[in-house]
Length: 101
Image (cartoon, rainbow, N blue to C red; front, side, top):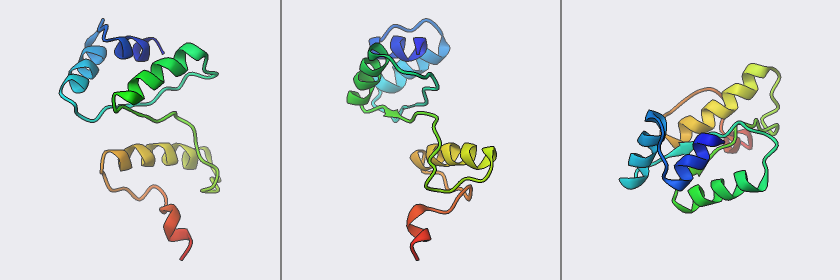
């Protein structure tokens, strides 16, 4: 959450934060994957600030509608969602809409 906060406030102290700052400056796609829990109001405000700047906020939490059977299934879901945001094809799980057919 420290890095997320510094990125939200435009205060770069290391290479990751500076890279995120440049991505925002150039209006490119930035994806943040916070892993902190529980979230407090400051965390949520910082995430809202980034979201309002167009940052995709993707908490590292699995979805259970895919009916995961293993921890790997849960990890694959999160990774698959990130790959989809990056327009990268994957076969980590079947898309939700294909289950309906």
